[in-house]
Length: 400
Image (cartoon, rainbow, N blue to C red; front, side, top):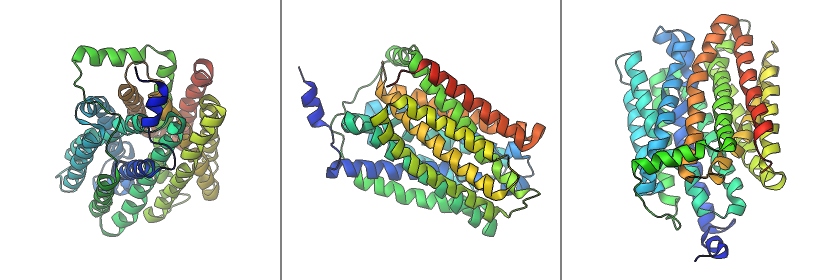
């Protein structure tokens, strides 16, 4: 029988070269994934005009991909169980890069959406497996910190995809804007391939369908895990809605900002890069629940600030909501894997199913609220979603 001390000795310890290599690898594959996933977001006003579609339909460029991610995470978790986390993530991200390049030559808007959905299916392999990969390989004592570092890579990716694509897109066309992000993603994939260490604690296994369903249902029977999955669904849905439609608000009167200038609002993502790893440290010290709730409340405060008709206040509000969102997301994503009761990678995949499902649904519905009630309508939706997530966390989740 293997003792807990023996298991701990086989895990990567903080500060060691393999630990740093793993975090570097996951940081860069996070950049590659989320740069591509969100590269059209800063281009939505341009796509809306060129393709002659409404803002809510233009936002389907994001929702189609995030729906693909939501539906892809669970199948990819089983592929990762069979062939290994690293190999599965490499295959997924390589196919996603190919899809991203092909989207720019599609003959019409609906063809673009179809291929964005397929791209999302491929991108789902990374969030499905990244947290499970690090949870297996690093010491449980630093798992929350490691998860926060991975999430910080996703924030850099989200920022890079938006802030690179939008200025290039306005200057020489949205297609070349997206292609430039694909080139960045390919470079990041090569870094991942070079730095990711070989798994030491992974045992390949092929899961029968009945066992697979049992693992998913087993995790869903846990009230705490169900609330953690809903955290991702509700808060991510609200977060993406803000970023999808804030560009339209700032491009329209009374602000009338050019698209290249609006794209700099995405620099607020750097606040998430700062808050995600620090939330992991605070969760290790004070417990996950209070840090998650504090993140949600911070997100609500920042969202409310975007109602003020002043560009500088809107920017400040966007920074605050981004700090809050990524703090709570870093905690919840690590919690989903650490507290799994019937399969760690399946639990992480269920979290991501809720996370990207919420992004796809509410990232689109936010546009309907915008059409019906203007920006205050979108803000009201986001505040309602985050308040519901906070109440559920307060009532159901244990302290740790």
